Image (cartoon, rainbow, N blue to C red; front, side):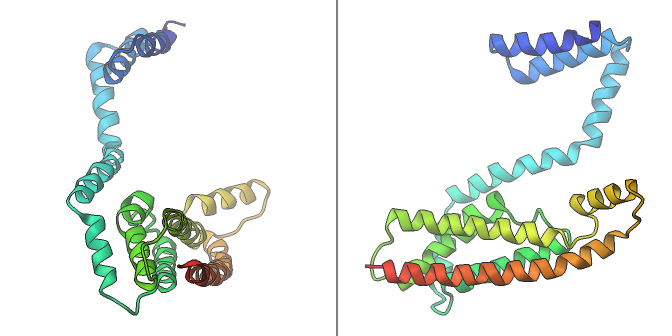
Length: 222
């Protein structure tokens, strides 16, 4: 029961408003010592955990980097870039991004794009600029929010229906393991192949939605 002292320290530390990192560190040290570990063994456990999970912390660098880029004018540059291409419409831009997202997700590259990495700082401003070039005046705030929502939805759909084609994705491995427990042995590649028709249909349906969305915006434009 002494091992549970770490939980009590976390609760008390957070309730008292102490530094969260300090609270977690003290809790881990007390838990390790209560479990019979020597101080050097506790320190070695910290080092091993950091070494094994050091790549996880790299993802935390994405948000501050994006924030710095946005402060330097990333969104304005994205809007200016797309405004220079008159042939790029809102529908064509988002359909192209949908195809890109599905193909990269099918190859297992699920982290090279996303809401924080590409949608908010790059694709959404480009989509707004493409819609702005077709409008006679400034876009209403409600229209801007609708464009941003559709852009985010495009990323979600491309990722969701594209990643199932990658045979090492968690959902595929989960199904393979579940079927194996039921006595049905199937290769991950077979499930991945059967995900391709679904991805194609999802692409066609959402592409049609994007075309209709663009037409609806044109009709509603002043």
